[in-house]
Amino acid sequence: MRRTSLSLAGITLLMGCAGEPTVVGTNSHPRTEAIASRSGSGASVAQDLATLRRVTASFHDFETAARAGWSTKITSCMEGPDGGMGFHYGNVGLIDGSVSVDQPELLLYEPEQNGKLRLVAVEYIIPYAAHSRDAEPPVLFGQQFMQNDVFQLWGLHAWVWKENPSGMFAPWNPKVTCENTTDVAAMAHH
Image 1 (cartoon, rainbow, N blue to C red):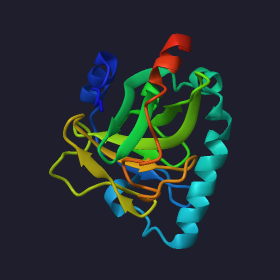
Image 2 (image 1 turned 60 degrees about the vertical axis):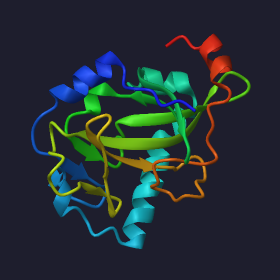
Image 3 (image 1 turned 120 degrees about the vertical axis):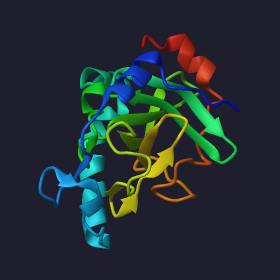
């Protein structure tokens, strides 16, 4: 099992972010403070997840996602004892210390046997440089972001494209594997 680190560009970008974090949901005012986010009622969370699925549906085609800005490979395929995450591809212009339901910073792709990448989830991230590790956790979808000291950021996954027995917002998905990474690497141009 492998855990990989951020690309040099990703580390540089994440360390360079500063300012106060903000969260924008579809039912909230733009630039709402992360810690003052909506309560996350079932109806608003369902609506926000539907919005997320709608805005990321075309990104099942990796080339479409890359053309739309999610072209920076942040990690190689990641898996651990609790499951996998896949490859993380980022839209570096969105890694600015704020998050919005309809603009996830990262798209997660699982390698398939046919050499293609399958969109399985998104991840919202806020670097510690923008929101201190010691501060209250940011909140989106009524969920608190989790600390990731390895990458020096707060993160929240949403498994909107592959069912996760561990939960919609769990970091790892036991149904995701990196076993087909070699096939993808042979076909990847990014």
